[in-house]
Image (cartoon, rainbow, N blue to C red; front, side, top):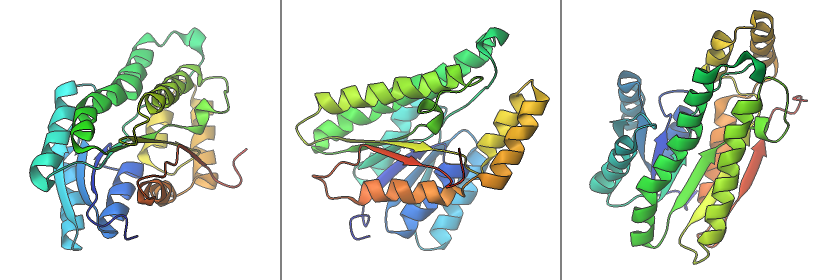
Length: 250
């Protein structure tokens, strides 16, 4: 835990679920956290709770599809705490259904948030990491990109695009100044799963997903602990990939 003290960590999608759990855990272990999401009222509540418990937190309203918002998130960390050690690219969306449904708007939303949003985060953080001589990109992916199943083709495609991107970036940065970590969670009990079910036109499949997550899903704290593990490693150690899922998930 000593490796977490005084780390400065910015987190997107921090208003609920995995992002919120990660912010709370890292702050409890001594990190200063900068919380980014679109729901500013919820961010304020999470940050106030962290501060009330003796932690350090700042908030920044962020839509990851807007590059300027990510730049503002990074600038907030540097201005308030003097640097940025870790950017957790956690914001994401999912619209499930057969490709043949031609949900073009849903495809665009997933590409904009899941791919372009990560690229915007990299573009904002990488110059700071280079100037400091160190930095860590942690990105939430999904087991959907590891086990390909019907109805998840486009969603899994966005996650695998980012997986490829991060591996290429890792190989380009061999001077020790950048670490990259991909976290692939399985079923997690969060609002994210609820939103997937709400947007799914196949109500039977949506109901089955809701029931499966309720029965099998992990608490978001489990993923937060995996993220903390990767961050807490010594600077010369990189945890490249973590797959974390319920023991009963097929």
